Length: 328
Image (cartoon, rainbow, N blue to C red; front, side):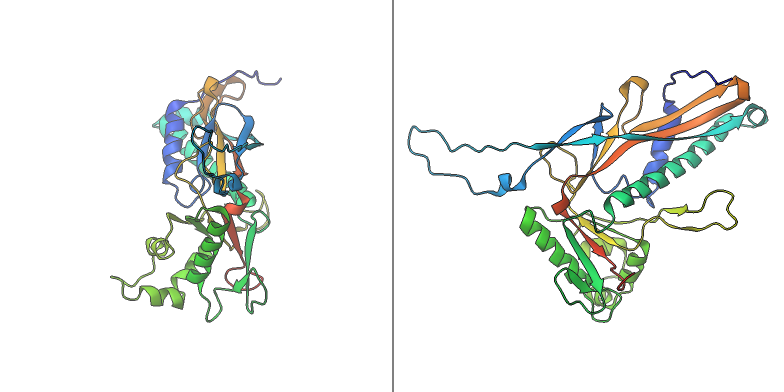
């Protein structure tokens, strides 16, 4: 017989613990790159402004007692849909009754579920943003660059990663009026940059002479330099052998992202989070519940998130493909 379904509200203590856990997980980057737009609706539209309407020189001389020249700027609209992802873990009553502290069991379940939800979010983020087919500008690493849009791969002798990034920033700013301020790299790219002779030469007279993330951020003049270090198991449960690795494949995303979202604030991307106010969902687009099922003699800890990662400014970012060596 199917278990009766009842509408359950979010559990604030578990949800708050989950938020704290998420904020402490610096290995995952899905929530840290682009601003978040919290919405009361699961689906709606957002405005897309034509940048030429901002940069066109339209001011005109005005004769006395006449009206000023008028600007007609009308935004287009694009839809978003915050899809719901959820996961639950059972706590059998027999095991719960024998536990010293029930809250510890629920907190442990919350942490395991939060970890898996973070993995899902980062994989969605990488699929949406971290590839060359998304953005207007792509640079491809080559052992011998021969055409526009190619650069000397940073694993090659004589390569110039700092100069390449600066040139990309100049190009995007010249086309949009906004200078990229965020850089996201894979772990292998970070390792390469930390040992790159050009970068080491640039910082050799600093206090410690050691390449750190903070130093790299300052070297290329960014507000944020982020490394996606989330790890996941790519093989199904029960497989003869298990395969684990970084979620983020080799690459570099250089993008413009404002400090906060706004109706008329350009950004390469926005994260839309559905705050289901009726059920008490948090501003992160989800939360945690706990409830019991008598037929199974167990309690459940259940977590979810409702997000949509949207590209809202294809010309406000550039992707560096194969930055380490050609074809990698």
